[in-house]
Image (cartoon, rainbow, N blue to C red; front, top):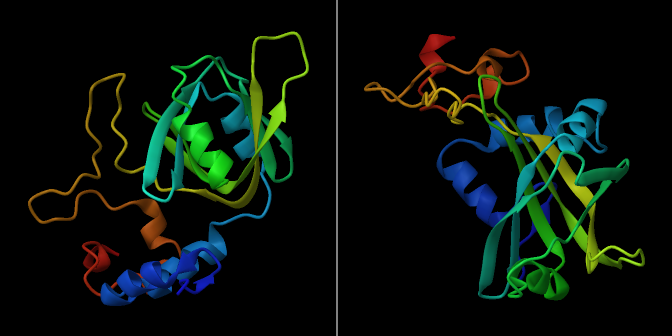
Length: 199
């Protein structure tokens, strides 16, 4: 029996959200964070990225792959689409083989440093044959149906080898992220959220 899927969440997500009093926060995040189209700031971030992580799966074959290239190797080609060239690899085709059988993918763009940033893009892939004279075999295009920024609070600053100040301390809290105090979210903090008493 297929899990019921509504919006960003299926029954498995909902089961854990309800177990840990997270459903209201999850719904608020979907309402206020998820966007239907790439915003100017998303395009700027994506097209300057030098790498991203790609998650694919088909049955028992699950893969998470690093994709890298010069800034601009990923291009936003429409309000809800992006693409990149498939560079020379090791001939295993683990990511592309999974996509051929199950076209849904998850993409994570991430920026390290003193101003960390994350963006998730989920959607369906198609392959475009490269008809230019380049040595690229395929262009991979993603039609995005979930675009949402993701809290960057646990990303370390690799330029200074400094851990995130948001990592849990002895009390289990760590520094409070600003978004938890935003009017859209503060009333939905779970019962046992470590920052509830810090608002």
